[in-house]
Length: 163
Image (cartoon, rainbow, N blue to C red; front, side, top):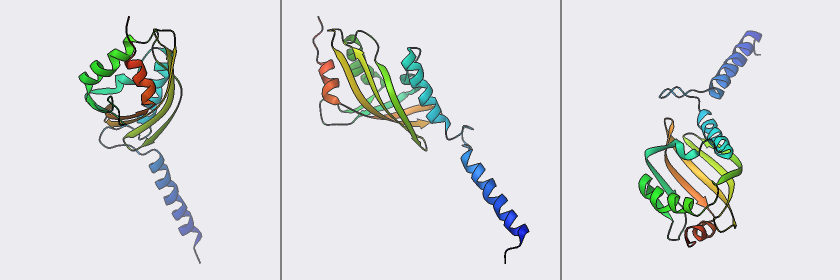
């Protein structure tokens, strides 16, 4: 038969362990495990308002991988990513790309965001796409991203003639 004291001690131990796991803190940087998810959520809220961007989370030596099998798929460092993809895309849009809805998931140092975004192109047509970005954090910066998106829609924008 379990003695009441032992039962209470076991319950207290289980409660203590459960509470410490829920609020687990990283010894390396002192941030809670949940904070990376919150950082990404907040960056998307700012992006939606036009006051920030998740691109601000990227480290200087980041690597961005676009999954797929077309000519834009591959892994880019910061400068080629900006020169070959971001700047050409930005030249072809009339208003900044804006996320419309998203869901965020976290597994350790990886934060996954699945979102839709849209904008108007310089030719007046609408651009809509659905994305899944896998951010890998080191401390408070994103060092690598793997991106999944509707590549034909993205490619169509990049190949649109500038007048």
